[in-house]
Image 1 (cartoon, rainbow, N blue to C red):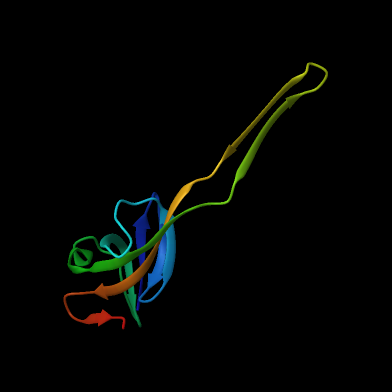
Image 2: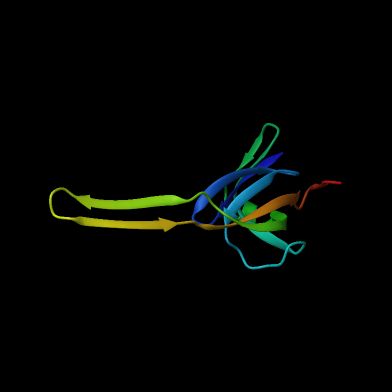
Length: 110
């Protein structure tokens, strides 16, 4: 069983036990959060209806907060002496999916 969830403006494919890196979310390491499901695949059954997904909960546990890779931004114009250098590192959160629960069945990880 896996689900497609909305996280930080993107969609991620998650299953129980997966470690997913998202944009920074509020919460201390060890706290749990709920992710919004968009699609649920359980064997041969695919559920994408919003009314049917209202009973589906995807829970995850915050593992840690980290920073992404550094992006170097360089601007240069030839023969004018114009040079600008800037860097950026995005704030990220690693979460571990602990359960995908539906109204019909319950699946949790150890």
